[in-house]
Length: 397
Image 1 (cartoon, rainbow, N blue to C red):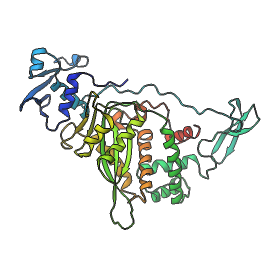
Image 2: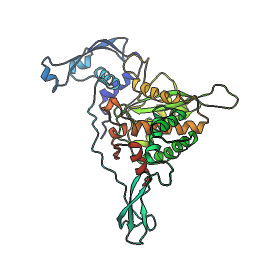
Image 3: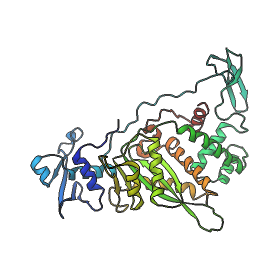
Image 4: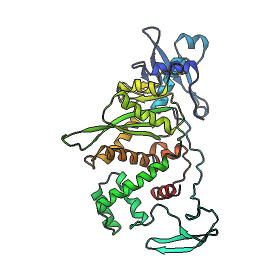
């Protein structure tokens, strides 16, 4: 289960963190934290055991100059505010190893009578290798399993290589040239786009089946995408990305024309649909729309946290939103070679594909080379050619 904040002092520490200019780092392990009751700062100090071996087992000690800590010797709200700040910044690393991911195999059933009483009946050779054939003991029908590439002119390797190169940032023209040089395969550029649309629709429906097991600190940011619009030379729309800090799982990608409160609510609403977690903190930049949007989507008058919004002063001061800025860079790697998107629907299809690629296909260095889907305990095992494996699983569901 994901830990939720219930300690009153920790909740007040979150309230301190949500206000600008309340925590100032004065040294490597020293901070000044603004008082909530008067115009003053309390000093918070973190100390580690001197013995190097003891540091591996014993947690650091915390000291604060406020009356609550000095008289009661408890972890006060000012210390909690610093600890939450470090957690958001990534300086305090949680143990976030993924749970056991079960092997997901496609169940074989007769496509004619839907019976599971089937047996293997030899193999069939085609231009791309051998395919296992099956026979139904109930109706006698013989068949092969459709792994998503049935009646396709080109091989699964060529199609999935195209998908991978596209989301790695290559243009359709460069993909066609790569296939011609290294695979001796001629593929027209419109065919590449048809494959992308077909398989993204299939994978999008499949990925919506699972709930992500994510942490309780999220990051949200927005970036622009250029849309071709009749009568306008330059027309931009906004891509909203909402990511979990612990697993790097991309919870939502939404496209809007503006950046008002109603627009900021869309990724938050989508995130509620893919996870059962109510976050303790949502880190954003200074866009004013976030404050009301977060409060409206997640918290009512009787909730223990009225607004978990942590609004950043800038991108240099910790805590910062750098993990989202890196994600936006991944998006720009793809969009800079596209020049523009033809329509708003194309933009929606694009962000859906990027979300699938980022969560399921692309290994992430920040989580030990795993994918965010693995860290979020999505129970599918994508090994080897991840595109081909996932398409095969999606086709059999």
